[in-house]
Image 1 (cartoon, each protein chain N blue to C red):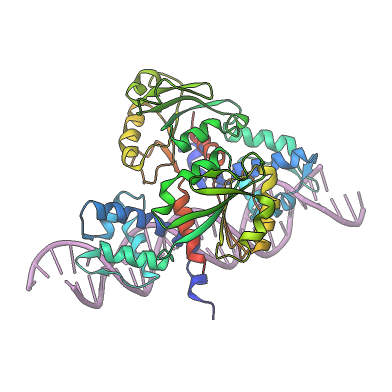
Image 2: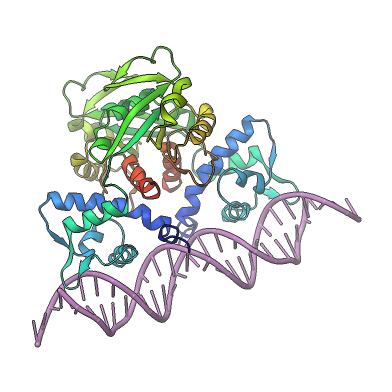
Amino acid sequence: MANQKNEIPEIVISRLPIYLQKLNQVLKEGKTLISSQELAYHLGVTATQIRKDLSNFGGFGKQGLGYNVVKLLESLRDILNLNRIWKAALFGVGNLGQALLSYKGFSSKGFEIVAAFDNDPQLVGKEIKGITVQSVDDMEKGMCASEVKIAIITVPAGQAQALANRLVDCGFKAILNYAPVTLVLPEEVKVSNIDPVLVLQKMAYYLD
Amino acid sequence: MANQKNEIPEIVISRLPIYLQKLNQVLKEGKTLISSQELAYHLGVTATQIRKDLSNFGGFGKQGLGYNVVKLLESLRDILNLNRIWKAALFGVGNLGQALLSYKGFSSKGFEIVAAFDNDPQLVGKEIKGITVQSVDDMEKGMCASEVKIAIITVPAGQAQALANRLVDCGFKAILNYAPVTLVLPEEVKVSNIDPVLVLQKMAYYLD
DNA sequence: TAGATTGTTAATCGATTAACAATC
DNA sequence: TAGATTGTTAATCGATTAACAATC
């Protein structure tokens, strides 16, 4: 009844990109085979956990040998829907927004920021990294009928919830939120938060 | 035997800053009392979980009434060691590093970047947001005997592990790592990673 | 074949939730 | 007092780990 996606724990899914990242490193080092033990070694997880995680999607290894690096990479990219380019729209072209526009790590991993929006009249119309900043007022015009389903929010905290509501109405399905607020949105929309202050506050507990 | 800190699950600690964030919002709205139910409502957690989390540290509420917002805020700040200013050093003054140097959210929450380091001769000596960029070569000179225990890494992936090793040798105890690699460090050093690509890759699984 | 490592089951561990007595 | 909500126990749920047969 429920499709397979619902059955696989989110915590498993969140580890797959880490495996992918490590496998890319391993590939660069020229290894063609890797055991779950080796893969686990530097990732802070156990070999058993890697095998268990992967077994949710099938058997990718060979007993006695381990995993073919290239094949496992391809399989993980398939599972995570990474065999395509994902377009994203950026909201808020301040310091952080501009840094993200300049970040080369997105495009090399298949994520491309194709539009940028800001409220500041000084910024609207300006071209940054090949992208012309548009007014947030015009968001619906260009985006709602487009194939862009990922939004990156780097607006001030006070504006984030209202913007997020508009994005959901517009049809965005995934939001990467850098604003320091917890967004309240329908559960069919995926939201992930990046807030360095929360992370530092957590670490502070263990200091001193 | 074991001190209390070891006994409280890390997952509990990681939720406390979120409660803190919400309580600050609630305080601004002028509320003086809040129930676990209300607090939970917009945080995607249950009221029971909030009460359970808090009960690790004592009883902060009053039956029939809820929690005094100001008192709970103060208690959480005490628990998380946030009643002081934490100094941090930044490594890597590229786009992202400069955005972090400009970010006002750190100082308003008690985190202050007091030093910045880069390898680029063009950047060394330059002053950004009141901080003079120093050469990474000189890191040990200024930092190892200092009270700065938090490092923020925004250098390229290939340089992060070697830098982190030096930081640990130097006496840093917490590392906020923006480089897209998993750092391997002694377990007494707290490491947190922020990598938007991993987050986007996870969300991609649920798209389409 | 002998050695190594997977994929999977069962056991363990730990976190979340439900329920409710205590009490404001 | 009556109603509300905490703090906590016990039950449930889910994730991790240990163990090992299968098999390369």
